[in-house]
Length: 303
Length: 253
Image (cartoon, rainbow over all chains, first blue to last red; front, side):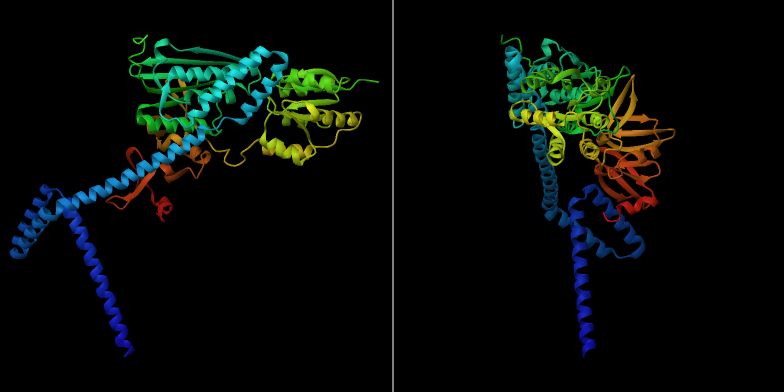
């Protein structure tokens, strides 16, 4: 009794498995049929016909296969193919938009970091200047306001600004650092008038400048100089931040800032933009951002 | 009786001025005998002038305030000064170290001055242990710091720094190693063996005698007609072979 029951159960399992396999084979075949090119299908038919006629003499079944697959492809193939493609595209689009959103959120969070060390030191300096040099205190205070106003709302604002706006923001930061470092920091900005209206992503120049000062010049006993230059070569706008600081440590982390710049360039421009870090033979560090040059064509005409 | 003496070390001139004038108000007898603009100068001037007290800013070029303190703690009484230093302030609050927050002044400075007045003439307390602790906190982060993060490659007349985050894979190419990023391909002299030793092993995997691949650039692992595992890389057409000895890397995938 028991034995037969077990045998029955085993048999049922086998039948079920065979059924499932057959179904999956059938759907695989169906998907393949739906997506295969007509040209390929015709060649396969011909091959089958030739083979079967010459070797196995089973003409009728083969004609049946040909007709059935032809019918299926015509009737259901188009719909099935469209379905599969749509599903494919959907998952792809989903992945892309999710990735984009995740990256954007991360970028926003990263940009939001005004360094507390910078903020507290600047406030301490303003406190000191109020006693010793009130007009200078007022200037630094204004610079700090400009810096914060430009930095804080831009955490939320997406997209691009102009190079001119980015340089303005950086001037406020540089003025504060010069007030703190005094003779230890020399600054020169060399950007042609017509480039100021060109599109340039927000907070990138700022990050390069902060890096140059924080990692290059502040740790150097004598300090040094920072040069900001812009040039256009063909279709590309290149902005360089050059310092003669202590140079690059190959084992130091990439830093949140540079990774942020690189990632945002990739999202905004794909392969058409670049962040290049170089260690010139003369010492120090040169960081360059290259983006497609998009001057404001109305600039100048409206004035 | 000799007037007590002090040295002020801060890389920002404004901050030195401020501390000097506030100290003058809070403790007129205290004589500021020297000012230092960096950690090295602080140690040198302290050796030269033998002050009773040294005020040390924490972030200074040359030597940090904490590094300078390690050379000075048995010779003079130390007070740290900082505007903001998360790690240090946490450590100060637990330990026996005296510290001031910028802008210095008010009751806090008075308390410190009273404490220092009672200490003048006494042997400074041994704070070596606290300083070592502080130093290990301060040179954060301890983990992961020692891996190579930048590849140096000669491009034209310049030495270019390529972040390892940009690198898709490294491949041995006779005497050189090819560094492949999404945007460029450069040759460097460093051997694959050297790179494998210096890079973060969680970031790059050796999949072949001549290939190191960035783990999160891997899109999929397939088999070719000969049954070899092949790795496909994001945004790059080249397929990379996984040699037999390394197929275990992808067993669970």
